[in-house]
Length: 330
Length: 257
Image (cartoon, rainbow over all chains, first blue to last red; front, side, top):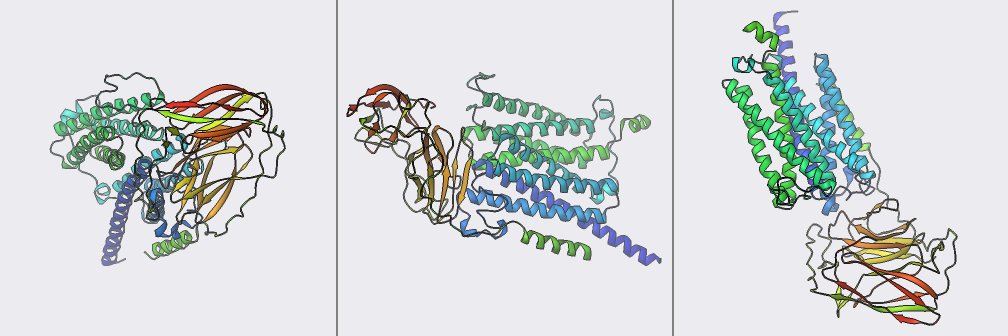
């Protein structure tokens, strides 16, 4: 094979892969939007406004007349269509990755994304058919976040930056800590994920206003636990406190130990800013008695906090040498 | 890229073929429930009559924002407290126990009852249906509704209705004060009382009511969606027309059935 042909092949491959990365990024953006639309369905209590599935009042859902998108149907049907679109994108993403990607584990991750989106569609249907049982609705909400994490991971792994090798970030400050940055980021991601589970539990048990005041709870620091709704709501508040500690800890660690590494500093800063917005939205959700847009924005920003944390965690694992390598370096 | 384009086209075709087709069939309007046996109710030879009075400040009906659906043009107001001349409407008054009903299972009436979704609100707001009796759910509006009864005792009811149509439904268990809503139009609210005997009624505008009974001793319950329930005992003989009044207060809190 001549040199020119090999160069052309290489350029072609690079083009395909950049295309795949951009497509994964587009799918991730659409997924974030889908989570917002899904949040709207819950906030407007429109989950059962279309009582049949996969049809819509007997119509093929793609042929449902726009003139009939009224009241709660608008939110529920929009959610179904956006979800279908994301499902469609995921099918393409999975096949494209399978065909174009050489790394076996990335191919299987794309298959996992496809499996997750299919399971998510079925769970969405079950929430309607079974009339929103808490367990199914929660599973639907949690799988949405899991799917979002998978797509963000795919976006990261297909990026030229990742494939060409992220720059190594060394820090003697971090190396001296018992919990290194990658582990800390992973712990933060886990905490955020658990907090989102608690949030979903709160939303789907209608416990969002079980404690009607903020920052106090019934005028006290610890509320009287007279119902499970109060306990669930309070657990979410305690979770918010723990997540805040974790994110601030991560942010400070990055700022102190990896000040010169923009690739770590930037997502850490974004995550911290998103946390501030999220805390304000959480408080406003109570103060506004669950105003639709505020409560929905709280769901969407929550997903973005998780997504940013996943992103930072992957970068940290990609950039920070493991302890053995650190020991060797020292 | 060619493979990818082929794949995208195939997926688009698949998605177009997916799901179902809209059927315009309107189910025939049932005349009533024909099945099921049970005890024949004793003839009603007496009655109790009276007024459900309301004490305290009457909440002003709130105008409902119906802009979510341009098909809902009629001006609507909340119906949870309907008071006229000091009388409270939409109170269920029914026999909860008594000599003529205890241990008996009554055959459902052959005549169906009907709830209509008309001008984006339920008519009537409070409706009694007997276990086994056919409830015809009508949609008279030129828009879509889903009728969603938030059942606890009965099996789920969440039915979508394209315009115009009637859907029959039968409840299998007693369930008083069963909330009904439309998830499309959040303001739509009604209440069913699924009773296990034929001795039940709803207070009319002005709070008046008449409950026809057979002779005997009964426990009577009056229950309202917002102001809770009251219980009284009564004994009636053939030909009696016993006056019994109930009083609900604005400060009353709702209780269960």
